[in-house]
Image 1: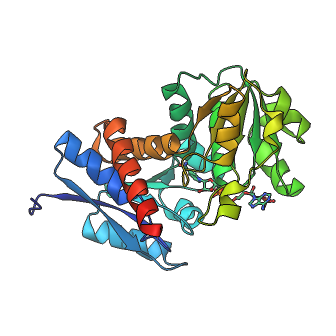
Image 2: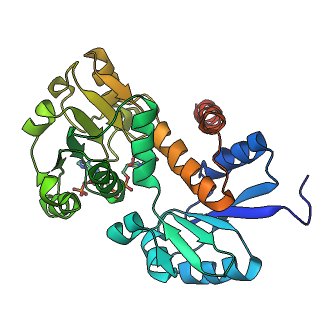
Image 3: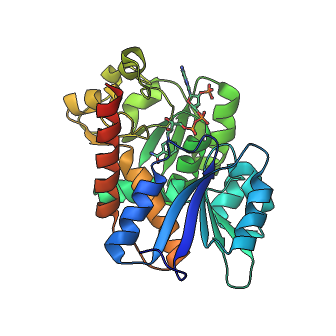
Length: 284
Ligand code: NAP
């Protein structure tokens, strides 16, 4: 029951109605018995600072931030965590008791948590990251913080690859497809494989013949959950890790920042899987 004491958190974005965040966060609030509710706010591009003013005015305890507001939010909050400061982007805002707004980036740490959940420690690993967009940069920054030995970025646009690789300092390199075969961890951080059409879903960010049984292969794409890339990894005996783990763990880190309570990632994952399955059915 929502009462006068119920705390509010939400996601801002545009478009935002497709967001899985309300389903994931509300499932965890319910599982933990917390008197919190999570909603989606459609905030037009350019209105991030106004949204923060609204957050303060309404006493909204926490915000999740999605496209296109992540950079604007990082620039507008009072203080940033190290990952958000390095990336110049924030996906989480906490309204502190003193009224200050703190920005965080939980995407990369969520990815590393999803690896650890699958029994994979990035410490000392040689990594190939495919892609150099916002998600790739968060992953590269977090893998470097987690002690990866070498991170090679393979991307269509070389200039973006160089910017992304620089996040890993002297452990970051720009590479080519040949670096995929020699990596112990291969991460698809491009949007290739995502989509509604068969052609989009058949696409793979690299030739799956480059993958092998000794590798761990992770995909950030979670719709569909089993991408062509991950299916290829499984077929050759590699350990395959899907993108829902990152989505769930970055949300779990957000919720812990807002409430101080570590949520149950299993409840979050089950809710997300059910919602994705329902969407899949209704799209047929
Ligand atoms: P983004 O900033 O738009 O970056 C897209 C990346 O994909 C760029 O590196 C781009 O290369 C590459 N790319 C796109 N189409 C391509 C094509 N046809 N051929 C070659 N390269 C192509 O997107 P993002 O925010 O980083 O998101 C990337 C993916 O991660 C999306 O599928 C998103 O849903 C997923 N994601 C998942 C999570 C999670 O929690 N699991 C979180 C965030 C994002 P160029 O640089 O050359 O354009």
